[in-house]
Image (cartoon, rainbow, N blue to C red):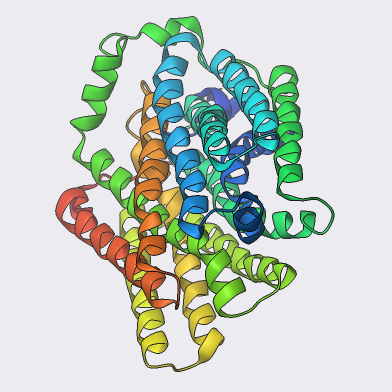
Amino acid sequence: MSAPATTGSLTVIVHPGDSLTRRQRLVYVLVLGMLTALGPFTIDLYLPAFPSLENDLGVQASTVQLTLTATTIGFAVGQLLVGPWSDKVGRRLPLILATTLHVIASVSAALAPNVEVLGLFRFLQGMGAAAGGVVAMAMVRDLFGGIPLVRMLSRLAMVNGLAPILAPLIGSQMLRFVDWRGIFVFLACYGAFVVVAAFTLIVETLPPARRHEAGHSTIRARYKALFSDRVFVGVALIGAMTFSGLFSYLSSSPFLFQQVYGLSTQAYGLLFAVNSVGVVVGVQISSRLARRVGPQWILACSTAVLLLSALTIMTLDTLHIGGLAGVLVPLWFFIAACGFGFPLVQVLGLAAHGKEAGTAASLLGALNFGVAGIISPVVGIIGVSSATPMAAVMACTAAVAILLLWFVVRPRSVPALTH
């Protein structure tokens, strides 16, 4: 896989995206970025409303967290359905129909009379939002390969990493003017805007001829190609562990920082804004390093930082050293390390699977949100009376990621990316 090859005065287009102008690439980045952000916004925008939702519906904190779990599981299930479907019928139709489901579910969630009904429509919201991230990644893989693929995926990874961090900040500011139901009305409007943008600005990137390539025309063949690739399986699980560590923080932070440390809703949102800088720094540096250093070696460093940061939080919190700063400083480095890892997981997972890009993207996303949906409630079950339970879960996910990298992916065996 490579960028345009030049022979004499003739430029050979190796991938469709190589012929796009700078302006056209910018349009794709903006629209696909909005699609990618829909899922994280759907999941995380209402995090600051957890305490008020708990009081309004008369339920316990652990029950409120289950509505978050329902969304992540719906997101995982939706990706498993949308990815193979987009490989079969093209990218645009699944995208538009699934996002329309998201809009309907968002309106219904805003009208939910109790937590059970809210959980049901949160599940459907997750399913509907699933198309954005899957189709965006698949479209980028349809258009690009090699180092240009790294560049484009790094931009989407920045959105994917920033959105979960910025969503609570935006949600906390919205709560100054609306209640938690108003947040779901906003999500319905955002989903509707995304549908219109996709319908008017996105063209089909998977022509009919490429939907039935030999050996990859059936779902079974696509999954066989993916699960027989040790590198794909390893990096997919590493991505799931990394995201689960981040999500353990996201799901427990409303209670930890607002109830244990006494931050206001706005201060809690500001905390997320500061942490978002870590994601930006991580994504930008890793995408540039990946042009010179193998992505697997950058992952080796980022996973080690994840573990060290989580262990530092546990140690300082247990010894009562540093107070709030003793949690926030190593937490920033943990989030920055997540930013380093996100684009590299996508690159390593998709690089060798252009023929089944939709299915590959769906598995990467489904594992992220499915595993996170299962692991993150563990913090609530243990209890959020201090930062230690959160950090312990983060440390465990980081340790598993390190083992997967060295014993499943095996960095020395990963082929170098082409230019």
